[in-house]
Length: 191
Image (cartoon, rainbow, N blue to C red; front, side, top):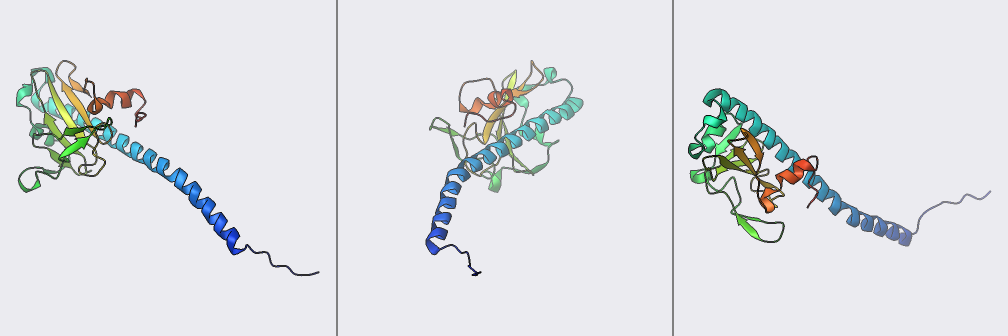
């Protein structure tokens, strides 16, 4: 019997590598987007739960939420019970939130104007627009890192005096998609 060596020709190797490259080019971008979505939702859920736990500590110290004067609330009231890396003021003023945020519809929006904090896990928080009954809580789950888009890595929660808890902000628009994420079982199905 004759010994034959089996081998691929150079052109067969090139064709095989081309096919692998095309398959990778088709599958990697959706996979990367899916993992990013999962990461953002996980960080949002962590921030939401952390703020709820924080609220429990605050009520032990300040009494029932219904008795709080919301117009006097600041991030300092919340920061006492959070793992804060630093307060974003002075030289660190621009280290927590991007200067502007995109929207899912292609527009742009602004970042919070009050003094925020950066948590040890990289989440930025700010307390905004306090009225007698509500305070908005701006959450950027990855601070200055992109994509900096409302409803993707930037969300708005709300401290509600009547409900005495933190809830998704009730409004229409890209920064009010937390309720959709929760209703979809903590999934980001719109992006």
